[in-house]
Image (cartoon, rainbow, N blue to C red; front, side):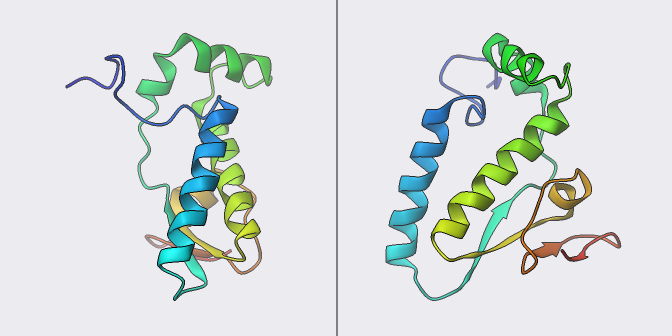
Length: 120
């Protein structure tokens, strides 16, 4: 199934409702699994083609002055998720791509991955 079909694919990082949903989800997860201060947010090999195929996402990226750079959108999304996790007093764990693409991470973040990874 193609990610470009209606109702499929990744969350839309251009919608404020995406972050409201993620905040609710993380809050509920933390209430259930409150055993670790670390939260793995992912970020490994994020495909940008679905975002690039969405006219609303493309308009959002252009309005931010990023042209068609979906890596900047990915960093924006990662930073929003980092903020949500910080509100829950969680330290972020992510894949090295998040760090390499310039997302702002807290000093206590853990970065997993190949030779470029390390603590951020």
